Image 1: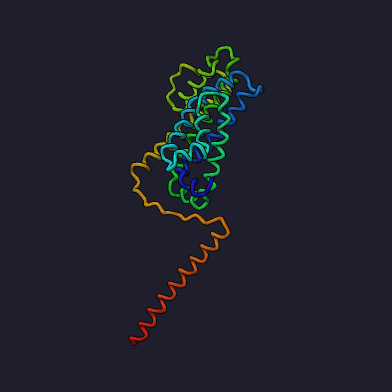
Image 2: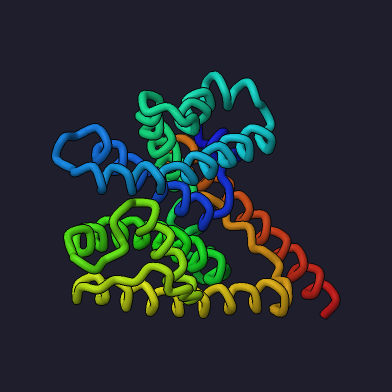
Length: 263
Protein backbone atom coordinates (compact mmCIF):
# COMPACT_ATOMS: atom_id res chain seq x y z
CA UNK A 1 0.00 0.00 0.00
CA UNK A 2 1.43 3.33 -0.99
CA UNK A 3 1.45 6.39 1.23
CA UNK A 4 -0.88 8.17 -1.20
CA UNK A 5 -3.51 5.44 -1.05
CA UNK A 6 -3.19 5.32 2.74
CA UNK A 7 -3.81 9.05 3.02
CA UNK A 8 -6.92 8.77 0.84
CA UNK A 9 -8.33 5.86 2.84
CA UNK A 10 -7.45 7.25 6.26
CA UNK A 11 -10.46 8.25 8.34
CA UNK A 12 -10.75 10.12 11.61
CA UNK A 13 -7.93 9.21 14.02
CA UNK A 14 -10.32 8.23 16.80
CA UNK A 15 -12.30 6.05 14.39
CA UNK A 16 -9.17 4.22 13.21
CA UNK A 17 -8.09 3.59 16.82
CA UNK A 18 -11.56 2.24 17.63
CA UNK A 19 -11.55 -0.15 14.67
CA UNK A 20 -8.00 -1.26 15.50
CA UNK A 21 -8.90 -2.04 19.12
CA UNK A 22 -12.03 -3.90 18.05
CA UNK A 23 -9.94 -5.93 15.60
CA UNK A 24 -7.56 -6.95 18.39
CA UNK A 25 -10.47 -7.94 20.64
CA UNK A 26 -12.17 -9.92 17.88
CA UNK A 27 -8.95 -11.82 17.09
CA UNK A 28 -8.57 -12.72 20.78
CA UNK A 29 -12.20 -13.89 20.74
CA UNK A 30 -11.46 -16.15 17.79
CA UNK A 31 -8.81 -18.00 19.80
CA UNK A 32 -11.14 -18.20 22.82
CA UNK A 33 -13.78 -19.86 20.62
CA UNK A 34 -11.55 -22.34 18.76
CA UNK A 35 -9.12 -23.33 21.53
CA UNK A 36 -10.22 -26.04 23.99
CA UNK A 37 -8.91 -24.15 27.04
CA UNK A 38 -12.18 -22.19 27.56
CA UNK A 39 -15.38 -23.60 29.04
CA UNK A 40 -18.73 -23.48 27.29
CA UNK A 41 -20.03 -20.48 29.27
CA UNK A 42 -17.05 -18.37 28.22
CA UNK A 43 -17.43 -19.38 24.58
CA UNK A 44 -21.15 -18.59 24.67
CA UNK A 45 -20.48 -15.09 26.03
CA UNK A 46 -17.82 -14.45 23.39
CA UNK A 47 -20.13 -15.66 20.61
CA UNK A 48 -22.90 -13.27 21.74
CA UNK A 49 -20.51 -10.30 22.09
CA UNK A 50 -18.96 -11.05 18.70
CA UNK A 51 -22.33 -10.80 16.90
CA UNK A 52 -22.62 -6.97 17.10
CA UNK A 53 -18.90 -6.70 16.25
CA UNK A 54 -19.70 -8.24 12.88
CA UNK A 55 -22.18 -5.43 12.24
CA UNK A 56 -19.53 -2.84 13.15
CA UNK A 57 -17.03 -4.45 10.76
CA UNK A 58 -19.67 -4.62 8.02
CA UNK A 59 -20.36 -0.91 8.51
CA UNK A 60 -16.61 -0.24 8.37
CA UNK A 61 -16.34 -2.15 5.08
CA UNK A 62 -19.26 -0.24 3.52
CA UNK A 63 -17.98 3.07 4.88
CA UNK A 64 -14.55 2.56 3.31
CA UNK A 65 -16.02 1.20 0.08
CA UNK A 66 -18.35 4.14 -0.53
CA UNK A 67 -15.90 6.85 0.56
CA UNK A 68 -12.85 5.65 -1.38
CA UNK A 69 -12.05 7.20 -4.76
CA UNK A 70 -11.33 3.81 -6.36
CA UNK A 71 -13.71 1.09 -5.19
CA UNK A 72 -12.03 -1.59 -7.31
CA UNK A 73 -8.59 -0.72 -5.88
CA UNK A 74 -9.87 -0.92 -2.31
CA UNK A 75 -11.81 -4.15 -2.87
CA UNK A 76 -9.33 -6.15 -4.95
CA UNK A 77 -5.87 -4.70 -4.19
CA UNK A 78 -6.31 -3.24 -0.71
CA UNK A 79 -7.89 -6.26 0.99
CA UNK A 80 -11.45 -4.97 0.84
CA UNK A 81 -12.66 -8.48 0.04
CA UNK A 82 -11.01 -9.67 3.28
CA UNK A 83 -12.88 -6.94 5.19
CA UNK A 84 -16.14 -8.22 3.72
CA UNK A 85 -15.40 -11.85 4.59
CA UNK A 86 -14.33 -10.93 8.13
CA UNK A 87 -17.72 -9.32 8.77
CA UNK A 88 -19.72 -12.41 7.80
CA UNK A 89 -21.27 -14.61 10.55
CA UNK A 90 -19.07 -17.57 9.63
CA UNK A 91 -16.44 -18.81 12.08
CA UNK A 92 -13.95 -19.75 9.37
CA UNK A 93 -13.87 -16.29 7.80
CA UNK A 94 -13.20 -14.40 11.04
CA UNK A 95 -9.46 -15.03 10.66
CA UNK A 96 -9.49 -12.42 7.86
CA UNK A 97 -9.75 -9.78 10.60
CA UNK A 98 -5.96 -10.09 10.80
CA UNK A 99 -5.81 -8.30 7.43
CA UNK A 100 -8.08 -5.56 8.78
CA UNK A 101 -5.82 -5.06 11.80
CA UNK A 102 -2.74 -5.00 9.58
CA UNK A 103 -4.27 -2.30 7.36
CA UNK A 104 -5.36 -0.17 10.33
CA UNK A 105 -1.81 -0.32 11.74
CA UNK A 106 -0.47 0.73 8.33
CA UNK A 107 -2.94 3.61 8.15
CA UNK A 108 -2.00 4.85 11.62
CA UNK A 109 1.69 4.66 10.67
CA UNK A 110 0.94 6.73 7.57
CA UNK A 111 -1.00 9.16 9.73
CA UNK A 112 2.23 10.17 11.43
CA UNK A 113 2.97 11.24 15.01
CA UNK A 114 2.48 14.96 14.31
CA UNK A 115 -1.07 14.50 13.02
CA UNK A 116 -1.84 12.07 15.84
CA UNK A 117 -0.70 14.52 18.51
CA UNK A 118 -2.63 17.34 16.85
CA UNK A 119 -5.83 15.27 16.73
CA UNK A 120 -5.38 14.20 20.34
CA UNK A 121 -5.22 17.86 21.34
CA UNK A 122 -7.84 19.17 18.90
CA UNK A 123 -10.50 16.44 19.11
CA UNK A 124 -10.13 15.02 22.61
CA UNK A 125 -13.87 14.42 23.04
CA UNK A 126 -14.24 12.18 19.97
CA UNK A 127 -11.13 10.17 20.76
CA UNK A 128 -12.20 9.75 24.39
CA UNK A 129 -15.64 8.57 23.23
CA UNK A 130 -14.03 6.05 20.85
CA UNK A 131 -11.83 4.59 23.57
CA UNK A 132 -14.66 4.55 26.15
CA UNK A 133 -16.94 2.81 23.64
CA UNK A 134 -14.35 0.09 23.15
CA UNK A 135 -13.85 -0.24 26.91
CA UNK A 136 -17.60 -0.69 27.36
CA UNK A 137 -17.56 -3.69 25.01
CA UNK A 138 -14.42 -5.11 26.61
CA UNK A 139 -15.64 -4.69 30.20
CA UNK A 140 -19.08 -6.15 29.42
CA UNK A 141 -17.43 -9.24 27.94
CA UNK A 142 -14.99 -9.68 30.84
CA UNK A 143 -17.69 -8.99 33.44
CA UNK A 144 -20.05 -11.56 31.91
CA UNK A 145 -17.36 -14.23 31.90
CA UNK A 146 -16.35 -13.51 35.50
CA UNK A 147 -19.90 -13.21 36.86
CA UNK A 148 -20.86 -16.55 35.32
CA UNK A 149 -17.82 -18.13 36.92
CA UNK A 150 -18.82 -16.65 40.29
CA UNK A 151 -22.60 -17.16 40.10
CA UNK A 152 -23.23 -20.32 38.08
CA UNK A 153 -22.55 -22.62 41.05
CA UNK A 154 -24.23 -20.48 43.75
CA UNK A 155 -27.40 -21.98 45.24
CA UNK A 156 -29.68 -18.92 45.04
CA UNK A 157 -28.24 -17.35 41.90
CA UNK A 158 -30.34 -16.58 38.81
CA UNK A 159 -27.31 -15.72 36.64
CA UNK A 160 -26.57 -19.06 35.04
CA UNK A 161 -26.51 -18.53 31.28
CA UNK A 162 -24.57 -16.29 28.89
CA UNK A 163 -27.75 -14.49 27.81
CA UNK A 164 -28.73 -13.71 31.39
CA UNK A 165 -25.25 -12.43 32.27
CA UNK A 166 -25.09 -10.14 29.23
CA UNK A 167 -28.57 -8.74 29.97
CA UNK A 168 -27.52 -8.09 33.57
CA UNK A 169 -24.22 -6.47 32.50
CA UNK A 170 -25.90 -4.11 30.03
CA UNK A 171 -28.62 -3.13 32.51
CA UNK A 172 -26.00 -2.54 35.21
CA UNK A 173 -23.52 -0.54 33.14
CA UNK A 174 -26.29 1.73 31.86
CA UNK A 175 -27.36 2.25 35.51
CA UNK A 176 -30.93 1.19 34.70
CA UNK A 177 -31.03 -1.56 37.30
CA UNK A 178 -34.21 -3.56 36.63
CA UNK A 179 -33.33 -5.99 39.43
CA UNK A 180 -34.61 -9.07 37.57
CA UNK A 181 -31.12 -10.58 37.69
CA UNK A 182 -28.86 -9.90 40.66
CA UNK A 183 -25.59 -11.45 41.83
CA UNK A 184 -25.63 -13.14 45.23
CA UNK A 185 -21.94 -13.95 45.73
CA UNK A 186 -19.38 -11.41 46.99
CA UNK A 187 -17.35 -11.69 43.78
CA UNK A 188 -20.46 -11.21 41.65
CA UNK A 189 -21.47 -8.10 43.58
CA UNK A 190 -17.95 -6.69 43.30
CA UNK A 191 -18.16 -7.08 39.52
CA UNK A 192 -21.52 -5.26 39.64
CA UNK A 193 -19.96 -2.35 41.54
CA UNK A 194 -17.21 -2.04 38.92
CA UNK A 195 -19.80 -2.01 36.13
CA UNK A 196 -21.87 0.69 37.84
CA UNK A 197 -18.83 2.92 38.41
CA UNK A 198 -17.78 2.50 34.79
CA UNK A 199 -21.34 3.21 33.65
CA UNK A 200 -21.39 6.54 35.49
CA UNK A 201 -18.02 7.41 33.90
CA UNK A 202 -19.41 6.53 30.49
CA UNK A 203 -22.39 8.85 30.93
CA UNK A 204 -20.05 11.67 32.00
CA UNK A 205 -17.86 11.23 28.91
CA UNK A 206 -20.91 10.99 26.64
CA UNK A 207 -22.38 14.17 28.12
CA UNK A 208 -19.07 15.99 27.66
CA UNK A 209 -18.82 14.79 24.06
CA UNK A 210 -22.32 15.97 23.19
CA UNK A 211 -21.68 19.34 24.83
CA UNK A 212 -18.44 19.69 22.86
CA UNK A 213 -20.07 18.65 19.60
CA UNK A 214 -23.10 20.95 19.81
CA UNK A 215 -21.92 23.94 21.84
CA UNK A 216 -18.21 24.38 21.08
CA UNK A 217 -17.38 26.74 18.19
CA UNK A 218 -16.17 25.05 15.05
CA UNK A 219 -12.42 25.41 14.73
CA UNK A 220 -10.65 25.59 11.44
CA UNK A 221 -8.54 22.50 10.87
CA UNK A 222 -4.86 23.03 10.35
CA UNK A 223 -3.43 20.93 7.58
CA UNK A 224 -0.20 19.37 8.78
CA UNK A 225 2.22 18.47 6.07
CA UNK A 226 3.63 14.95 6.33
CA UNK A 227 7.41 14.73 6.13
CA UNK A 228 8.68 12.66 3.18
CA UNK A 229 10.35 9.36 4.06
CA UNK A 230 12.22 8.75 0.79
CA UNK A 231 15.81 10.22 0.83
CA UNK A 232 15.39 11.75 -2.65
CA UNK A 233 12.10 13.31 -1.59
CA UNK A 234 13.77 14.76 1.51
CA UNK A 235 16.56 16.29 -0.64
CA UNK A 236 13.96 17.78 -3.00
CA UNK A 237 12.04 19.21 -0.03
CA UNK A 238 15.20 20.80 1.41
CA UNK A 239 16.11 22.29 -1.98
CA UNK A 240 12.60 23.71 -2.29
CA UNK A 241 12.90 25.36 1.13
CA UNK A 242 16.33 26.80 0.24
CA UNK A 243 15.05 28.17 -3.07
CA UNK A 244 12.10 29.75 -1.29
CA UNK A 245 14.40 31.38 1.25
CA UNK A 246 16.74 32.65 -1.51
CA UNK A 247 13.80 34.17 -3.34
CA UNK A 248 12.67 35.89 -0.13
CA UNK A 249 16.17 37.29 0.47
CA UNK A 250 16.35 38.50 -3.14
CA UNK A 251 13.03 40.32 -2.80
CA UNK A 252 14.19 41.95 0.43
CA UNK A 253 17.49 43.04 -1.18
CA UNK A 254 15.62 44.55 -4.14
CA UNK A 255 13.35 46.53 -1.82
CA UNK A 256 16.35 47.69 0.20
CA UNK A 257 18.06 48.91 -3.01
CA UNK A 258 14.95 50.88 -3.97
CA UNK A 259 14.87 52.55 -0.55
CA UNK A 260 18.58 53.45 -0.81
CA UNK A 261 17.99 55.11 -4.20
CA UNK A 262 15.30 57.31 -2.68
CA UNK A 263 17.63 58.55 0.07
